[in-house]
Length: 317
Image (cartoon, rainbow, N blue to C red):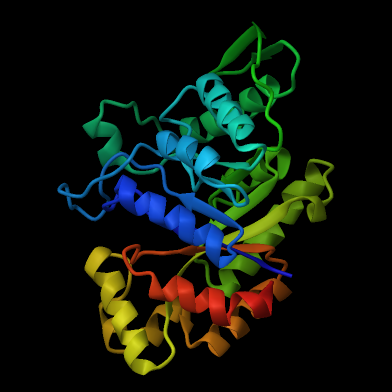
């Protein structure tokens, strides 16, 4: 059984009106979760596009929804001190009754760090920040006074309050040497964005090796994908959805996808009519994927999510 969630790029024109609508629709249609990115400016080069700071928007979901889980994919550890992030996340989780998935990553976009004066250290240091930061979060979530001494972060008898009720840590990324090792040691779930199946098999082999080295049963680490998608009931609807995706994210979908949407499938996208999408999801499920976050690039369009909820979700969940 596979879970389907919705994921949107919050820095590309998200307004409170649209966020409220997405929350209501995600819950009403039967999806299991709603995720959003955590970026500070448009990555498509559109500085006129609105955004809402990620953790403010999650605090809204905590009380505006009743059933779905929610979280970030992913919050860069470079943006916030992990002690502050741990307390923010715990408070939102308690407010929601235990439905938060805290997605964490090392950070990668140079421009937004430079724009807001946020230090952007070397990739090795950012990986150290992620690995130590997760340990800080877990220590503060333990309920006991937390002490930790790392190369970057240190705690001394720090109280963690409140203690989360059901928060989980999701580590997102694909680096085989460091990122997957961090996920194997400290995460509840590992997420990767639109790999091909060949790439995914290689990542799983590395992930399971890191799990064994850490003394962890690989089956105890949940696996999920973030997959962009183009769906439609016929060729005309597929081309219409592809055009809407490219209008908002011209740098994401191949230009040819407006004429031949199936070319996006070669880049790890879910593409096709409902029967084709079901077949693709079942192939991922056979590789051990437990949930898919549908990257809803055309977030002003309701029809694609409604079609998946009606024709795909009942057959895979």
